[in-house]
Amino acid sequence: MVTLAPPPPASGIRSRGLPPGTRAPDLGLPATPDGRRITLADVKGSPVVLIFYPGDFTPVCTNELGLFNELMPVLGQFGAKVFGISCDSLWSHIAFAKELHIQIPLLSDFHPKGEVSRRYNVYREEDVGICERALYVIDGKGVIYWSYVSPIELNPGADGVIDALERLTGKQMEFPTFQPQQQRPQPEART
Amino acid sequence: MSRLRRNVDANDWAKGPADAPVTLLEYGDFECPFCGRAFWELKRLESAVGDRVRFVFRHFPLTQLHPHALLAAEAAEAAGAQGKFWEMHDVLFQNQQNLEAPALLTYAADLGLDMGRFTRDLQEHRSLPQIQRDFIEGVRSGVNGTPTFFINGERHNGAYTAEALLAAIERRAGPDIEPMTGLPWEGDRVPRMGRPQSHM
Image 1 (tube, rainbow over the protein chains, first blue to last red):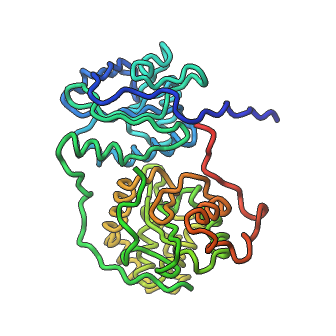
Image 2: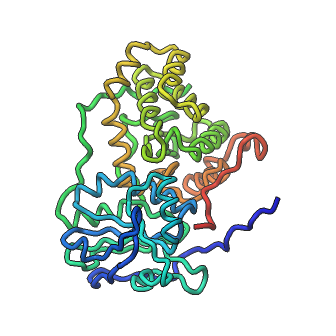
Image 3: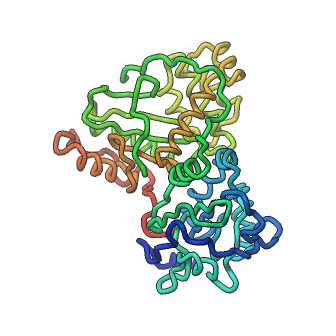
C-alpha cells in the first residue's frame, strides 16, 4: 500500500493582515451551501466575522471551525454574520461542512487563487500557497474593527472575537438561558 | 488571550489537595476521541506525580460534532450529585463509543447510584446551567478545542502526552514536582497522541 506523505509543514506567521481602521476589502466569493457569491454589501449594517483558515479537514482548522460553529448562537446575539474563508474549492468546502455539520457559510478563495486572502494581507505565497489563520471583525460600515493573525499551527480560539464584538456593539455577551443554579457538593476527596 | 478567567473554586470538580503546587485543569468532552486519548495520558501522569498535582475537570461539549457529549456531561454531573463524579468520568472515557442513554443508565447502576434520582436529574436537565457555564467561561478563557489544558491558570499549547504535560508542569513548578517513579507504560499500551504541531 502506498502512503502519501503529508504536505510540508508551515509554521509561524508570514503575512501580518490589515490593521483596525482599514476599509475592509470586498469578498465576492462563492459560498456554501449553494455557491451564491457573498459580498460585503450583502451584509451591510451588521458586524461581520471573517475566519481565514488554512485548509478544510486539517486538524487545527477542524477544531477551530467546530468551535465557531458551536458558538453561532452566541455570535448571533451581536447580530454578527460569520464566514469562513480558505483557498479550498467549493466542493471541498461542501464536503467539510457536511462532515462537521458546519452551519457557517464557507467561502471559496479558489479562483483566482488566494485573491481575497491577498487583499486582506493573509496569503502565504512563498511557502505553501494557503492563507494564514486569521480573524477579522468588521463593523457595519465596512471598516475593520479588530484583526488577529495567529501562528498557523495554533488555533486562536474565539475569545478575541467575542471581546471585540462586545466592544463594538456595546453589548455584553449573555449566557444562554439558565435554569436556577444548583449548588454542587464539595469536591470529593481523592480516592 | 488564553488565561483562565475564573480560578478553580468549590464549584469545580477537583481531585488532589487544594494546596498542591500545580493545578492541571482540563476542558473536555466525553465523546471527543482526543480527550479519550488524553484520559489515559492523565492516568499515567497521575500515577507518577501523586498528590503534588491537583486535577480539575470542566465541561466543554461540542454538541454539533458530538451528539452524545451533552447527555454524557449531564450523566457525570448527576453522578457527581451522588458523590461519584470521577468514577462516572472514568467510565465515560473508557466507553466513548457507547454513550447512548441506556448505556448511561447501566453505568449509573453499576456505580450503585440511586437510579430514581439519577434519572430525574437527567430528565430535568438539572446540571445543564452548570455545563453551559463551564462552556461559555471556557470560550472566554481561550479554550480552542478539546481537550484544552490550563496549568496554574495558563493555557498549555503543547502536546498532551503525559511526558509533555509533565515537562510543562516541571517548568512551572520547578524540581518539587519531579515524578516519584517515572511515567508508567511508556510507549506500548497507550496510543501516542499529541496535539499536531506541524500541520495546518
